[in-house]
Each structure stands twice: as structure tokens, then as C-alpha cells.
Length: 284
Image 1 (cartoon, rainbow, N blue to C red):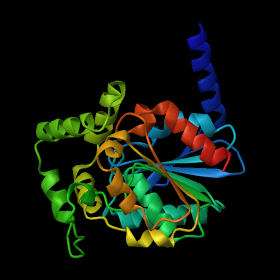
Image 2: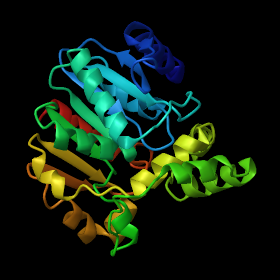
Image 3: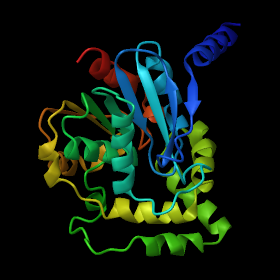
Image 4: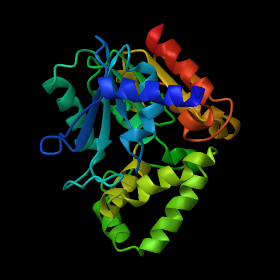
């Protein structure tokens, strides 16, 4: 009975606050707007995922804040748009903020979304009030390859074409294997895998290539707003020094390492994750 009351309460909250509207014609993402608070929070999901990855997080904040949850085209069953790129997505998110007169939002991103959040704060330093980066890196590739050097002439469209031609069964198996290595909370495994295998392969391949060729470590010094960086426990145990090195140019930052779990911190170390967000969003 107690569980039923909780479900009913969540349903009522969502029914009251929830507003969905498509921005697909103007922006390469759809937006769900929840809440009516004076302070806005923008949530950007990770690679291959849906904005629904933030459902539990948004439920914690929608009573007091206006939350905008983005779901990017080409991922998790949304129709792709031509010429997807991290740069285009970054600029489109900025345009959405400006077009809708969203004053000084807090921007929260996971993984790829964290990288986009960092890029927005680098290139538009006066735009966000604060940023939260959940396990996204200014140069992820260097964690696996210390000799990595960004290739300015790399054409990632080729990788999208190759993946588009990949056998569906092989694609599904590779996605499942990858997510299994990133997630300790196996209750969420099928959900996240389903998001990824519903993604457009061309978008999937091109953006993955861009992420693996992404290096903005030097530009971190351009960020002026307070920043919270949350790093997963697996990385904390193996590459903590490398993480500190990556973020050394980021001033006014708090870097914290999860106590357990893997890449999907919001599921693997949920209690710790919510303590960090609450402290930074509500009390900073």
C-alpha cells in the first residue's frame, strides 16, 4: 500500500508539471518541460540514450525548479536529422536557451551530455549559472590512449556509413556488451540497451567517432561558473591521477569520485549522487 501511494504521488507530480513539446523542426532535439520554479535546470543525456535517463533526477527537482529535459534526434528511437555533430548540437542548445529567454540556467550533462555541457560553458561562459558534469571528460580518448592526439582532419561521416552497414544482430550484441561494462545496476540494463539499439546507426557511428576525437582540455580555463564534476568509481580506482590532470585547467571546480559503481552514476551510486546534486544545486 505504501508503494502504491508513492507511485500515485509521482504520477500526480508528473501530471501537474509535465509538458512535452517538439522542437524537431527548429532544434535537433525534443524537450520536456517540468516544473515552474524561477531557477531553470537543463538536462542533457549521454550517448545513445534518451532524456528519460534523468527521470528520477528530475522528479527530485521539478517541485522547486523549471526543468528542461532534452532528447537528441537520432538516439533512442527519435528520427535522425541530417549532419549530426557535437558542434551543431552545442550551438542548438545555446540557441534554445536564448530563444526561450532562459536566464542563467544550471546545465547538467551525463557522459556525452557532460562533454556538451563543458563545451557550452567554455564557448559561452556567461550563459550558465553553474554546470554539473556527470562522468563526461574533456578528452575521453586519452584515458585509454596516453599518446592520443586530436585529428583535425578526421571525417567521422565515414564511421557513420560503416556502422549503418553493420549487421543488426552484431550491432545489438556489441551495444549490449558495451553497456554491461558501464553499468552495475543490471535492472536498468535492458532499458539502456533498448535506447541504444533504437538509435540511428549513422548518427551513432558519426557521433561516437567525434567523441573519441574530442579534446578540449586547454579550453577548460575559459569556464568561469562554478562546476561540479562527478567521476565514476571504476575510473577513481584506476585512473584518478589522469582525471585530475584532465581537469587541471578548470577553475572554481569541485571534483568528486563516486563510492561505488560505474559510468551510469545516477543508477549505480544513487544515494551518493543525489547528495552531490542536492548540495550543489540547492545549497551552493
